Image 1 (spheres, rainbow, N blue to C red):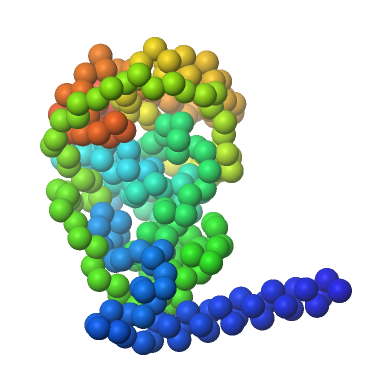
Image 2: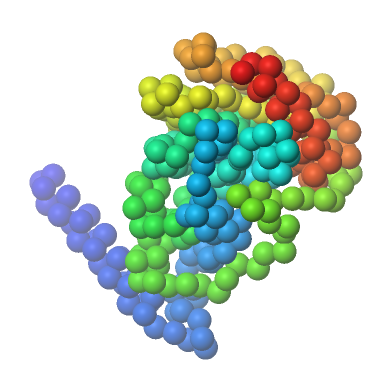
Length: 303
């Protein structure tokens, strides 16, 4: 009975893949027919594609620091500022990057990585989101990386994107108006005007949470000098209570396993000024300047 069910599921998967290939080979009004049926095929381009293009040609040295994380990472760590302080920096952050995807990227590129910053904040340690996986599959620099990412969450949408990639489908390039800087960084110059009267529930770690442990364990075992960092966030009294009373104790259950890993927590570095932010979650260039200078000073202080 179980064999029959397994065979049935396998046949269904093959049929779906063949259908995707068929739809991917037909064009209508210049666009792949696939795009009319599946909005989850992420267009090529944007920061993810530009980052992978740079990564192909990037040659690290003994001073090089790599960064992994979500948009907090790629909008929060400026290679130019680190360069002035004597460090090369490559920012491997991507939109909504899961910690599971971060772990995969670190493993694949571990031959290049000797120093690593893992950017964290509460939301990135919750569930494994599809957005990260879809964009990474579509824009990865090679099929080996794309397949490794696909294994992190196999759904109809992630299979769709892998089929699109293997069929050499290049959807219309993603419009990209942001200011991309070499080595993965995106500069934001606008200022955010906000209302920070939100209410917060207790922190509930999701499936993604254990992969922070995986990243740190892999780094330590492979003699990668790794630290964990959190950049300034928008906060009010309720957020401070949420962060300190429910998030940090859970985060510490992992960090305490690795006494050699330093946590640079700059969450409340600032006075909650809107002038540091481009939106409710991300720093603008003014905020990045302040944060990166503090972080670099602390990195040097801790050697």
